[in-house]
Image (tube, rainbow, N blue to C red; front, side, top):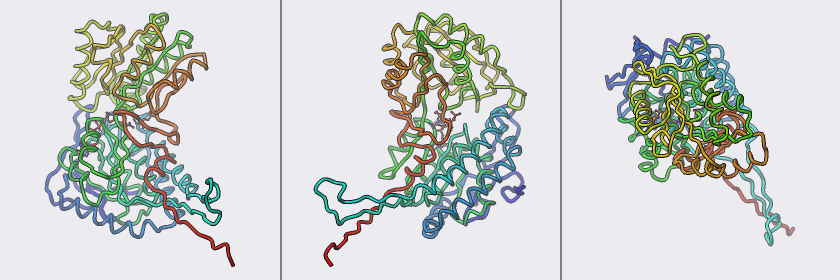
Length: 489
Ligand code: NAP
Ligand code: G3P
């Protein structure tokens, strides 16, 4: 077991700089409290601009050696970090549960899933060495040319993670970036920072060389722009809301970027779907972690002929869901990350009721605990038809034809994922091909996993592609060395 005491002093969590946990000179501390009961969890530091400069310049300097390290050496460190995470899974899952109000079972599985992710990344990177291209493969080109194409790291990758998966979505940036030979400057979400810093300690304890992984804590609204526009940023890997993503893109300049942003994933239900199974998928897809997943099912588009039956089945499934506190056994819906988020969700609910949606279940709230809410007969003038709630509310929109479902789905500003439920494989493919999203799931809920599949959003849902191999490729660039043979002796 790793001893975590160096990371903090009197509940003040430090930042990792050049291999050491350090305290900021800012004297500006941000309190982190548990969203479900307001209990104090610790303080993180708002770092100064000078400290950010130091973290960048240390990373930049370290890049010179890390980029030349052996892949097997990098992979060994990642395997050790994965083991440390796994050995401490219960401890870290408890902190995660408190910090982001995620039910304990999901928190634990996030930690274990992340350890698997890190291991797979270590192995996958070994296979991605580059390729050799031959000149004579191109029409009219020379036989005496050969290009050796290697993959080069980009430099300092600024990684910024959101609150909802502070372990998984941090590691899914850090591990591929490191394996590609980059160094990482990591900014955790403020709510979620403590959990994420434990992940960083796993990398440190695993032997990551000094300066290869540095952290910067502080509020994104205060330090974010300074980080994004810093002269030493070579790449930005960001996950968060579309609004912040757009803002970052507007100020970043010519820096390569990956963005994983918001979504409004549709579950499209055709007449011949297995409705019992579909209802189960919709409920777990929409309400796990209280709907605070980018990949949550966020609207149902159902053919009128089966809409009554589906609405009934979804509502029956929904009644089985347990609402409560994150450590309660078997709980699914827990308090949202903060009151502001609950207010936003309530605003969507109020708007739908005002405009005549049929409330099947829900519209109950205690502080930031919003009970699962299901609406039928949602129409396109309602905010809930288009906006991402990031909370436990689901609209059912009835459609007359499959074409109408596709049109509504594609009219969204988002394009993360969709699901189509049908027993007709031809229709499934046809719908899947028409949808403007990164991924379509046939007969299952929208979801990111498994983590080696390509994961991407189009339109306001993001840019660039993640997924283990894709992330390594996105955080590296090809370099060609052309060998010209002299064929005359
Ligand atoms: P958020 O408010 O956009 O914050 C995300 C991260 O950006 C946090 O670390 C935040 O720091 C930081 N940040 C804020 N302003 C910044 C700025 N000006 N410059 C640089 N960084 C800045 O998002 P969230 O509420 O944490 O997460 C929920 C959103 O993320 C949802 O919209 C969800 O759909 C999306 N998401 C997408 C995916 C995906 O894979 N597509 C996955 C998960 C979540 P602070 O915490 O300090 O404010
Ligand atoms: O929202 C982040 C993403 O990692 C969720 O993963 O597989 O639960 O959809 P998954």
